[in-house]
Length: 205
Image (cartoon, rainbow, N blue to C red; front, side, top):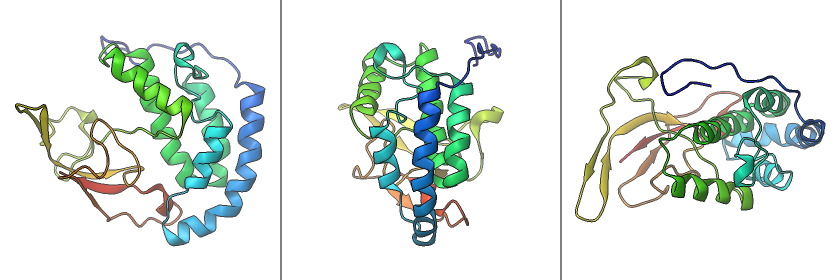
């Protein structure tokens, strides 16, 4: 994990919970049968995420204090490896979801009320989360560039403006701004063999 000072702290190693591994392995068999259809159609694998939710794997990296399994990155990677062999698109969406919850569990930048709300929605149902970061000119802001997207305060809240090249799971997820909100638009540019069902489309608002 990355500390507030920017240093990488070594995460304690532990074996993935046998029950989690068994559940993922069982689901992977069903996912593998659905993969060709989802990838051919480019349709989002809703059934896979319903199964993941019912198996308790959607909340794998949600803090244990908030009702999740509280797993770390090593355990999440083990589960993603199992799912990824069966359906790369599902694993890609799930990996982004896991990462965001790992960040929330370890960062003081998230408002407590909001992080609890997002955690509860994931534990109780099928709520996915990701971050929109990659822009046409900048690429990823992880390299230190300044994003062109701007958030302006208004009398009633905030107005966001910008364009993102792609965000995995874009057609069905929301991050701060609900998908489908007036002024937001999904730009369907994603057509990658084996990952069509991940819905990694562009986003503009």
